Length: 617
Image (cartoon, rainbow, N blue to C red; front, side, top):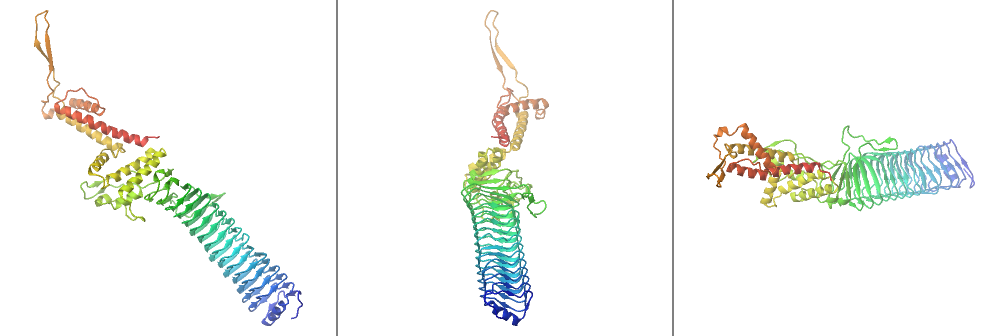
C-alpha cells in the first residue's frame, strides 16, 4: 500500500489479518493526515510504537484481540478510542498525547507510564479490568468519571489540573504514592477497596465527598488547601499519619479507625467523626482545633497544642445538609466519646465536653489544674458490691464517688489485703501504675480545676480521692495517717453527711444512756437554810446551802421515762454548746463536758458535708 505524506487512511469496519496489518503499518510511516479505523478488528498484536499521528485518529469501537503498543507514539492532534476494546495489554509508555477520548473503552490491562500530555484525556466509564499504571506521567487534564479499575497505579503522577475521579470504582488496590495534584482532585462518590496516597501532595482542594473506602492510607500527605470528605465512609481504617493540613478538614466522616498520629494542623480545623478509635498521638496543633466525635476512643497523649483543643461528644447523628451520615454501630451502643490518656499534654489548652473518662489516665499531664471539663464528663466508680474476706475488718463497703483510672489501677495492685483489691478489676495499664502520691496530686489538680470553674460540688469527689490517697500513702507519718483515718471514719473527710449524722445520733444515744445510768441524780437536792434566829429587832443571818447531787436509785429504776426526758434535754443542749442547767452527778458533769466537745464537732462535720454538696459559687 503506497500513500503520499499527508493523505488520509480509512479502514472503517475492516478486519485486519497479519498481511493487511503489515500494509497498514507501512502506510502509517508516511504520516497520513487522518486515520479512520472505527469498528476495525485486529486479530493479532499491533505495534504502533514510535508512530507519529499528526492528524485526527478514530479508533472508536475498534477491537484488539491481542495487545496493542503505542509506546513512544505521538498524537499531535485528537484521537478517539470511544468504546474501543483491548483484550490484551495496551501500552502508551512514553507517548505524547493530545486530546484523546477513551470514553466507554475496555482494557484488559494498560500502561500509561511516563506519558506527556498537551491536551485532555477522557477516561469516563472506561474499564481497566486487570491493571493500569500511570506511573511518572505528566497529566495536564484527565477525567475518570465512572471509570472502573482492577488495580490502579499512579505513582509520582503529576496532575496539572484537577483530575476528576468522581464515581470511579477501584475494585482492588489503588496507589497514588508520591502523586502531585497541583489543582486539587475530585474523588467524590468514588469507591475504593484499598487505596494509598502516601507522600502525595494536594495543592488545591481535595474532594472526597461521599467517597467509600475499605481502607485509605494518606500517610505523609500534604494538603495545602481544604480536605473535603463530608459523608465519606470507610469500613476499616483511614490513616492520616504524619500529614500536614494547611487548610480545613470538612466532615463528617465515618471509619472504623482514624489515625492522625504526628499530624500537623496549621489552620483552624473542626473534625466531625463517627469512629471506634481516633489516634491523635503526638499531633501538633498550630491553630485551634475541635473534634466532635461519636463512639470514638480518642488517644491524644503527647500531642503538642499551641492553641486550645476541644474534644466533645456529638449527641445526634452527623448530617451534611439533609443527608445523614451512615454509622452502622451496634444498636443501643453509647455514642459518648472516650479519652484514654492525656499524658504529656499541656492541659491548660484542653477542653473536654461530655466525654467518658472512665479509662483515662492523667499521670504525666502538665498544668492539669487548668484543664476544662465541661458538660457531663463521666468517671469510674468504686465497687458497688459488699465484699467479705479475711482481714481485721472482714467487710468492705465503698461509697459512691468519682474515681480516676489511675486510682483504680493502683488499688488493683495495692500492697494491702486481697480484700482491699477485690472488685477493682485488673491491673493492666499501657503506661505503668502511678503511686499514691502522684495520684493524690492528680486529684488535687483536678479538684482545683473544677473549683476554678465554680463547680465546687463536682470537685468534692476529687477532694475525697485526694484524701484517700494521702491516707494510703506509706511515706506519711503514722500520726498524720491516724488523724486521716479518724477524719475518714467520722465524716468521710467532711463529705459524708450521713456518716457524721450516724455518729452524732449514736453519740447522743450513748450519752442519754450514760446520763440515765450515772449522770442524773436520784432526786433534785433541796436547799437548806441554817443560822441563829435573833430576837425581834435584831439582824438574823441565814446560810443557804445545797447538798451535792447524789444517785441513790437502784439500777433498775434509773431507766424510766421521766429520766429519759431529762437526759434528752441535757444531750440536745450539749449538741449546740448550751448548758442544760440540770443538776448532775460528778460523773454526769464529766459526761456532759465530753458531750459538749464531741457532738458539736460531729454536727459541724455533717453541716460541712451538706454545704459541700449543695454550694454554688
